[in-house]
Length: 305
Ligand code: NAD
Image (cartoon, rainbow, N blue to C red; front, top):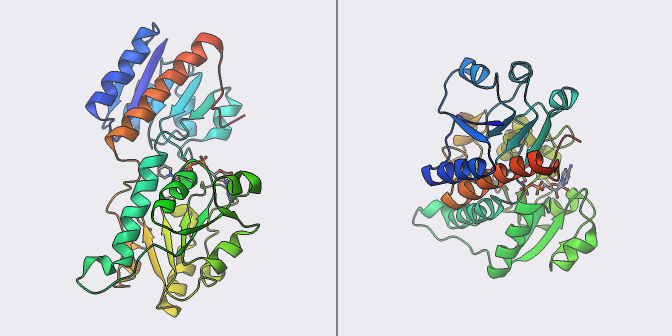
């Protein structure tokens, strides 16, 4: 089988080598398309492949229609909102992600950003500490659980809400489970977002929700920009000068947010999963999942059932 590794943002060299080796040892043929700048390059490359490994690459109706032999797409990473999963399903194409492989990387970044924020962005002025503060984790998935693990080391009081994860699983991790996301915002000094971008979560972080935060509250977003209602968050930040917004995903209205000196920070580019380890682990996991699919039809990580 031909397996295309199509990445606008390439894998690290050692990761690509390991991915190709994994595919070859199963008797398949890896093909690489890296740093492409035009969609036509992707349309040409998918023509005769049975499997596709991507990162944040956009897999649209057009791409799926250009790939008549395609059977499986694996997103090396967690979020798969860049793939038209519904159309893929209609065409009988399995879509998978590689859950958990970059979760520690994202969770560590949360704390890197948080320390920076509570220490007044290292501007030389006095700040505050994370120890003893209440941390609210919105979604207790792979990233949320790693955030909870690290937060314990900081001595934080940890709360979580997840629409699908049972409260006893959250409590078993030594975290207080709350029954509504509003409670996280009402209770916690800091709320960290780990929800996927879905029809339910898009623009769900809005004025009324963030306004529930106590004085000096912080929202940190390493999930997706789409979950934020940007006009409402900007309005809230204008009305509540005590609130900070920290993000790993530059908002569309970055220039507007940037006017909020000392209360806003965005990484220049999404950096959550940008570690050598996450890059390697997610890429190799993707190759293994493709091999397992062709070997025995395994679709354990399918996201478009
Ligand atoms: P995951 O699939 O392991 O966890 C997602 C959790 O969200 C699940 O527990 C699910 O039950 C919960 N959930 C789904 N809908 C919900 C809702 N409406 N309300 C509350 N909870 C809901 O994913 P993950 O690995 O923890 O990653 C979370 C998100 O972070 C990804 O979807 C992705 O968008 C983003 N992410 C960003 C980066 C980055 O580079 N910044 C890297 C990895 C992941």
